[in-house]
Image 1 (cartoon, rainbow, N blue to C red):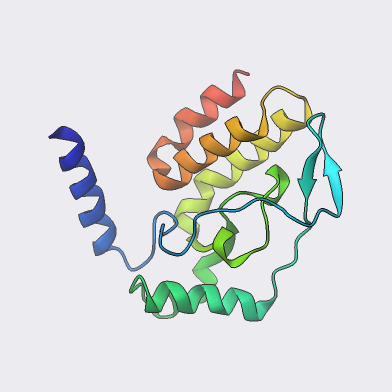
Image 2: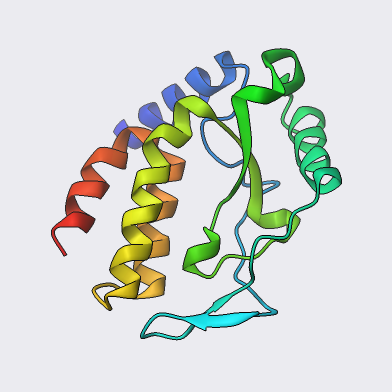
Amino acid sequence: MMLFLVTLLSSFSQALLPYPTSPDARLTVGSLCDQAVEYRYPERIKYCGRDVSTHEKDLVIQAYQRTAGYPILQVGRDKFKIDHYVPLCMGGSNNMNNLWPQHQSIYVYTDPLEALGCQKLSLGKIKQAAVIALIFQAKKNPALSQRIYQVMNAL
């Protein structure tokens, strides 16, 4: 019952905002690099390089406006970046299903976490699957970002 209420309140509060606070599961499921330009870290994780055109970014915004109903352009395009749900440095792809319009009020919390996660990957302190799971938790619930950062920093 408690989980139902938390989910309901989360959905209700997100519906009140003119921007997504997390990736929409209908549009952004996340995906890994399938055409590596190099391999990184002790785990030899595929790295795709940054390759998302302005047109593709516009398509992501249009999809979130049309499918999820977020008035992103009315809020102001300059308030958003097109984020990789699975970060590139963690082996994420440039595919549309790995992109979402992330508002600046969210990426101030998740960007430092991504940087730390990639640092821990480079040191061999965490595995790709584990760090992606932590990033997904933070991007699904940005309020957890600080706690996840602390946990990851302790590794």
